[in-house]
Length: 153
Ligand SMILES: [Zn+2]
Image (cartoon, rainbow, N blue to C red; front, top):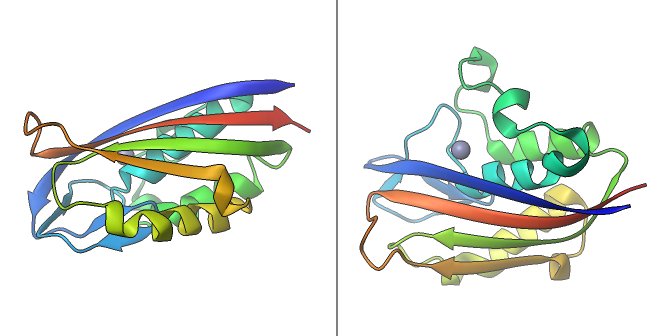
């Protein structure tokens, strides 16, 4: 049975913090304010993947008031979800839209696709990433939407 999952996440940006997107550190004067590493792409991706069959979300799986997850690498959480919650789920493809005014993430696109494909154990061709800006209407935040096609096996 095939199902579509949708995920969304948003983080506020602040100067002097590291910026992680899809498990890749982006050179940037500012990064996400978060309990974890604030990887907005991984958070939205987990939501898209665990919604359709497990009926849960990243906040329920990894509560942001749990000290175990302070500063955690979100890509490690994605790997854990892949091994456990998604054990019986085949991931057909994921399509990601990141909304960020600067820095430009196009130079990192291939690296991010590789990083996510490796964590999910799927072909890089199945991970698509688009970068948009907010047209300077939301300079202090980064947003991400993800859709995923998944199948119970
Ligand atoms: Zn998040």
